[in-house]
Length: 438
Image (tube, rainbow, N blue to C red):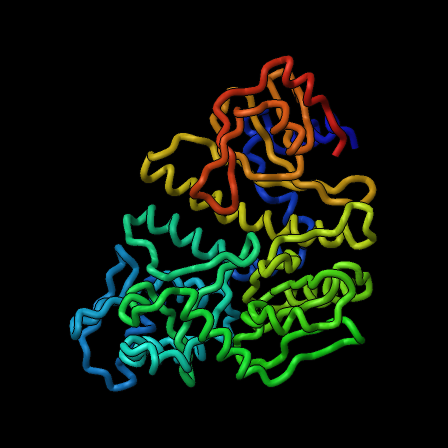
């Protein structure tokens, strides 16, 4: 399909050119019909509201026999216990609760009640006493980015949890491990102990290595964490162990969810195929996704990686990445629209991350940079540039950026990355971009 034909098809659905730049994620979601069906079911049999969740926790407290006075503060979405003036921010645990299937939510509530009753009281003030129970934990970076946007929307304080990036899409943090729960370590905890995040993380990774019971091995060169202790994803941080794995090429890891972490080699097509098979199955079945983006171990750091375009598995990796980023941008757009509507702090139009399948079955992501529209563009493979007269230009992201220069400004405090555009390219720049088939 040519770019002009693709644009005409888009406009049949979306109307005039300005509306075309508001194209929703339908195209991406059509690539995964099963996930759409699950999303629709969740709307009718979905998670509790924030108020219902808070009331369920309070009821759980009461059933434990606790006599402490607990008040729900809906404005800041927190529970306040007047005894000791203890506050519990609910945003993080609410999001985790909502990600679970209905069958697992009751057990999760019970664990939360126990954790909230004892977590702060159980974390020792002395680091020498606390260090043996420290563990690393892996999170989706988008969860914290979305919580920051929600905090801006509600005028609330951001979470005080030290975080370290793992690749582009994951964060690591510290938790205090207990028999039935884990409590996040805040900067206040580190200050009380008199240690840095890195010192505490060194102890946490040592503890994790010591507690690792087994690694699975498929064939000679595919490895998987399989301790089943809710920390298998965190074992991506055990770099010395991973460097010792027998792999073909550089170590490549995927951390698809909390209880899974796979490692194979960059030059091992069989191992990469197994990694893809397991990741696709995991994402289809498990409620707690982390990231399907592969990472390569380079000089002690995990960096995002993808095979070359001519690689036989390139399109499958690309599809996983497109679906993953599409969902992240979809969630971010909803929050940014709400923030901008309620706070009026930014008048930019939040453009959609969209995707299309070509005749060969490949999936391409694109966004729309509309003429005369101050926009925040998602980072996509391609950019479509329409005017009232039709599609003026379309090109690969790097080509467009090279031609338009400083018209695209990265927004520093947003994840996933967006670029602010206020001016439309000139006729000369549009001609230099040209038109490319998706």
